[in-house]
Picture 1 (cartoon, rainbow, N blue to C red):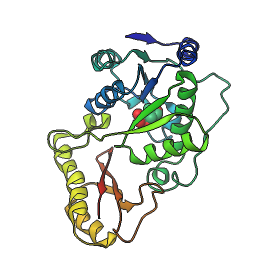
Picture 2 (picture 1 turned 45 degrees about the vertical axis):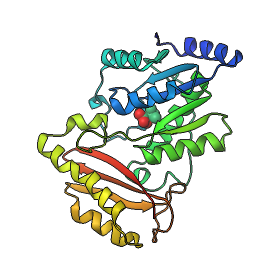
Picture 3 (picture 1 turned 90 degrees about the horizontal axis):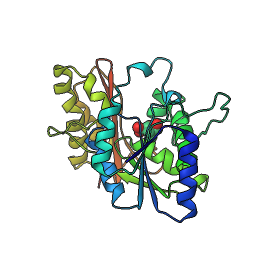
Picture 4 (picture 1 turned 180 degrees about the vertical axis):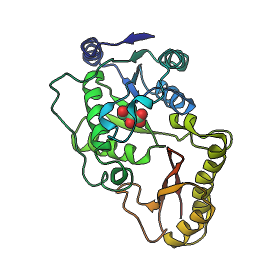
Length: 273
Ligand code: PAF
């Protein structure tokens, strides 16, 4: 596995692979890799000839009250995990943006609610960094985990709207042995908060397994189970538009974000009527 830190080297290599018609798979990450990430890397490995993983903690997607410097990092451990999962090139730029960088990528509609409402400018930061990474890495396909369901929807819309010619593939949400959705942020949970955090997926499962046709009734069933310090949202949405629905009459997605101490946890499940 090669480790590349320079954006110019990365793009020069990528353009060469593209000219030779290689199928290049890409898994962008912010590092501190867990089994959720390595699952994406292993799945992408099977679909491409060259596999690139990026690790870059993107300042643009952090709000002013969100502590960028507190984001967990483990470059050595990450490199070992990437190598073991079959990565060919690990792109770990120290700095991704030139000093006079002046472009922002804004995706409309699907960014306004949920994470978009809680974290203004977050998705602009995500879309901008992924767009730049796509330009540097020139992938034919990229995989994003469904754990961040809204992020996946935003990036799928961006790639389609801008005719990027990159296949955006959903990767599965991976859970711990007790059902907690794997997240780099789980390390911040106290043992007590981690125990309470299990009610997040339990609430989503209750809502999924309810027989009611009413979204409001299903959400009430989920809320009855949930034990958290505060709930940002618990909703049943259309999986394409992310608009909330009233009736559970087609395949939908239940999404939730709750806070435990200072830690925000996201989770979601697919709902079949
Ligand atoms: O999901 C993430 O880790 C990040 O939002 C991404 C897609 C790598 C962009 O920084």
